[in-house]
Image (cartoon, rainbow, N blue to C red; front, top):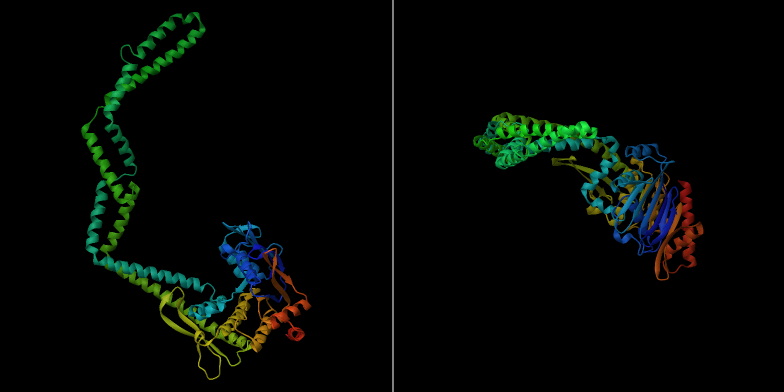
Amino acid sequence: MLVSLHVKNLALMEEAEVEFGDGLNILSGETGAGKSIIIGSINLALGEKVPKEMLREQSEYALVELVFRVENKEQARQLQELDIYPENDEIIMSRKITASRSVGKINSETVSASCMRNVASLLIDIHGQHEHQSLLHKKKHLEILDEYAQDKLGNKKEVLKKRFQEYQAALVELDQAQKDGEGRERELSFLEYEIQEIADANLIPGEDQELEISYKKMANSRRIMEAAANAYEMTGADGSSTEQIGRALRELQSVAEYDPQLEELSSQLEEIDVLLNDFNRELSSYMSDGEFDEETFYETEKRLDLVNHLKDKFGGSIEAVLQAKERKELRSQRLRDYEAYLEQLLERLSQAKTALKDISEEVSKIRQKCAKKLVKQVQEALVDLNFLDVSFTMEFEDSGKYTANGRDEAEFLISTNPGEPLKPLGKVASGGELSRIMLAIKTILAESDQIETLIFDEIDAGISGRTAQMVAEKMNLIGKSHQIICITHLPQIAAMADQHYLIRKNVVKNVTYSNIILLEEEESVSELARMLGGVKITDTVRESAREMKALAISVKSQK
């Protein structure tokens, strides 16, 4: 359950702390007092998008923090699958918002908004002001049924999606193959030309690098030989450094016996002389072998041009060219064996369609079986919500085509008066009736998915009188097994509160603030009187409020 909410610098809220209790938590207040901020702040903490206008004027940041207590073992297990572990049976979800970014955390660890939404889906279910309008769309009806039947469906919807993807892939490949067949001979001829072109080249991995080195050397051979000859002239010819070093060596050797230090220097110079002579011999040999061969240069250039052409054409490297050849050979083989390939694809498509058909039928049977239970439970709940002569059912149709959701189309049908035929919700139900239908559905889904906390934002739209009283009693009944947080304008619902909070707006020095307080019993009666009487609260109105509260207490004690 949701233990507490802390809000700071959010819209009209400078700072507020609310501790929620078990059962039915009612939030009421004047229009514009800031009730929507409470639901909005909870949504933010649960990973929803952050409207820029939510940040309070002149504030550097806003903060929303929710504390949940998790005692349900199944809930804890599902959280662990998301790698979320309650600490002391608590989970703290927070969102810090600045003008440029927001940071979400779970138990002090930064997480993504999608992670927060996934965790929130296990902890809380929020029914927004206009969510009941989604019942006007048939697609929503099947989603509701699948949510109700999730335990029976298990992983079958994931399998269904996978089988549909396999079927689609087989369809696409067959379609492409049939298109290919139209120009098969032309493509086959072109493929064989390219395969032969690569095969004739006899490419060797790495040879392009060797060719580049050889070509570069031959293309610059004249300059290389000139530089080598000049170096040899400086180091090995008459009057060169070799000759000078030889003379210097003989001079030192002639006096080395008189000074040990000269003997050491003489040895060093002798090593230099030997190294330089070796260098000259190798340089001379290099020049002898380095004569420019025009034919070799031409063949190297021609080979390099061929290799580079194939690289440019088929992928940028010799390895890529060879891989392209393998792909083209495979493609060529398929085209040569075109009829066999088509048969293979048709067989694969048939198998994929059979597998898709089987899982679709399996999912459909589970849906139809669960739909009978769902509509029975919804009808019972609707009677509790003052639909006294209601008939409610779900009609299935075959869409005629496969989707990732199977072939089912399903729609809720309702009749609210005796003798009237069942019709789609959108053709029968008013806004207030849709709101009650959604309340009935939410109640049933909450029982099946073990979510402990339900939030209803103005579920009372379009209802009054006896119907409002029955909705109030239904909310009280749900509060026996769930934590309910409900924003309402109806005194009948507010009177049923286990905890009643008032959201009010104050202006201090031309600055508007909203805050929230927990009402004592007498304060709750005063708020009920305001809800009943409007601007002027008379003694009669206050007495009516007191009677309404007493009646609610009586009802709560009976159930």
